[in-house]
Image (cartoon, rainbow, N blue to C red; front, side):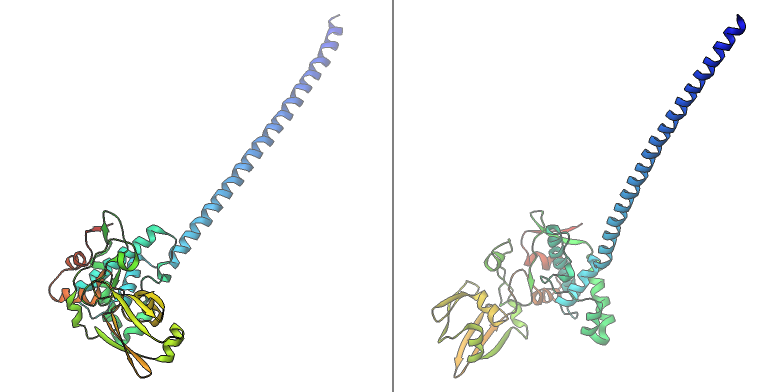
Amino acid sequence: MKKIMTLIVVPIVVIGLYWFFSYFNQSFKDDMVVINEITDSTEKQSIKENTSTEIKTSKIAEEKQSYPDIEEYIVGVVACEMPALYEEEALKAQAVAARTFAQYRLAKNPNIKLENETDQCYIDTSKQREKWGSDYEVYYEKIKKAVASVKNVIMTQNNELFKSFYFSTSNGVTESSLAVFGEGNIKSVESSWDKESKNYEVQTEFLEEELTTLLGIFNTIEIKERDTNHHVTKVSVDNKEMSGIEFRKLLSLRSTDFEITKTDDHYLITTYGYGHGVGMSQYGANYLAKSGQTYESILKYYYNDINLKTY
């Protein structure tokens, strides 16, 4: 009887153990497949994320490499905008005005390429060499030193960056930003010393046919209105009226303070000052610097209600 029971139980146990190990082995394989799939998926996702990060970082790096350092950019602006022979305090004032304008533009659009913008004149070192020739090293170091001495200094109005307009030479009084550009809060101030500039008064001759090309066929040109600072605000060409600013742009005049004289077949236009007239007069800044004024006092004279800050 025991022998018979042994013969029956043993095969059952063997078969049971076979099923058990077969099922466990398959389950283990399935689990390993799932684990491998999860691992592969994670590794692929990680690779994808790392690749994406590398691409973004690389792109930013490339952009930084192609974009000039802001302080080196300011050197290029000062080199282009102001004579290198000007006083150091005037160069400092120009650097702060240029940096403020640049930071204002960047705050509005961080992706702009400042060196490609036309709001401020900019020349790189190769063009500086062309401009200054054998004096390059002396002038470059002079401007670089001035810019470095006011590194990161900007102006604010009401604790905000603003368009810190500047120009070459006034007609004796600067213009308000609202009058010229229809925006901002830069007020008009006296700058009578600008009249001492050798280029304060300039005469330009236009043949009548030249003006016809620029203005169209006409019989008369007449100044109709001026503002309190003697800048022309309205001009009539026959029956057509335009602003003094429009007329200046059409004829590429030096300023909107001008006189028109007709003689025979040509017109003589005399301009006073140079530039749009808003903000800091560069000639005026140099005059004040020669008089012992610091860059801070120069800026606070030409730009009302400002604070100087280091960012």
